[in-house]
Image (tube, rainbow, N blue to C red):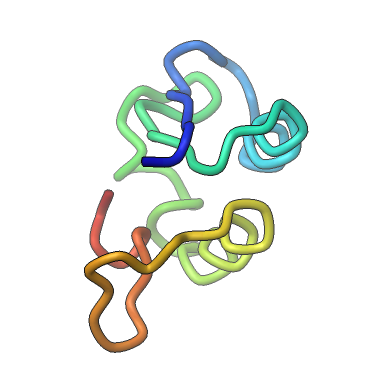
Length: 80
């Protein structure tokens, strides 16, 4: 198991802040429970129209181990 954090403890942070600060603190993953001031990430551009860019940013900061991985999917594809 890799250490991760939840965005509930970082209200108001942008996606870039989540990636930069979480990675700098030694976390290897993030559990999105909101982004900036929106608790429902499914309504944010980062998780709808800009999902491809979001995946690239997350993968650049957080390495996914690939346990149980199939095909080329990542934890973002799986909705985790």
